[in-house]
Image (tube, rainbow, N blue to C red; front, side, top):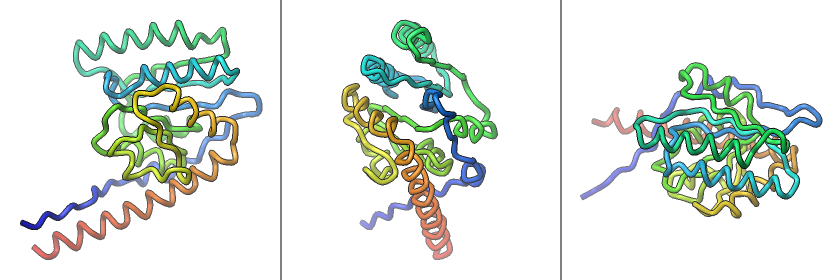
Length: 212
């Protein structure tokens, strides 16, 4: 049997229109996670990584755009809020903001607030949010699992960190956090990469369906 794998075409026009965020002098860089709040998404690992950064004197603001879809995940969300309050207290130079679910048309504005996109999932099928972040001109730090590997070019558009390892995640984030020019160059490279990827995806799908 012959198996044909077609890339997924996504309309990212609204994200390509985003003007990449530039942190004000002296302001803490802004990290963004977008998606469901679930244990498998590794958000607790991200908070541990940021706590390690804090110990090294690096301060950030973390935005979490998304929410829970069942009672178990709602309990996890409450645990995250408590963990965030304990480990990322604004009194220590950290901020963590839970934005809740965002309407899709509002998401480009959320990405526009960020300097770096983070997806610390323990497992990920593909990662539409990564494509959105790259289209918005953000460098990406994601777990080194199957989905993100298809999109993130290591050292070019972002970094891949060992899944479930807060130290590895912290080190990748630290590299970007201390170099604004690197963030900008990776963001531009990511935008170009996902633009090519989506163009190829649309052409491949168009060719396939026209032959049926």
